Image 1 (cartoon, rainbow, N blue to C red):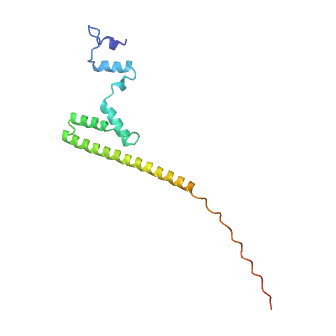
Image 2 (image 1 turned 60 degrees about the horizontal axis):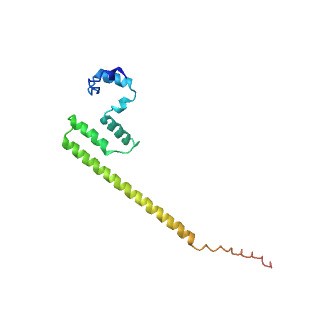
Image 3 (image 1 turned 180 degrees about the horizontal axis):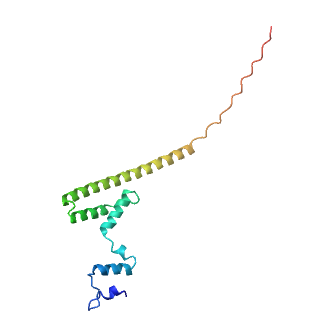
Length: 145
């Protein structure tokens, strides 16, 4: 067992939940990947929002909520402003979802129209073959007088 964890036990064999700064640093060095587990939800939300802004992923309202709650906790904005921004974000997200649903319905209708048009073309009678007209008889040169 890593020395940091061995020293973090209390008398009853349970782990003590309070770790000091040096203990956390040692823990992060000892257990690779623990930094991802201990990562801040605000940091995750910021990363997700940046990816959504670059259109690398989809926008998640929960990420915006997390960042706005952080701003309120740190007194960077008021609760009223946070509520207003969240309401705008929810409204925009709902409109985007409605437009996406409308576009999907239009694609389904267009596909059905194309399929019906193809079926209609197949059931029509074949066109009559074009009959070539005989070429006009060449004029014969008349008798020269």
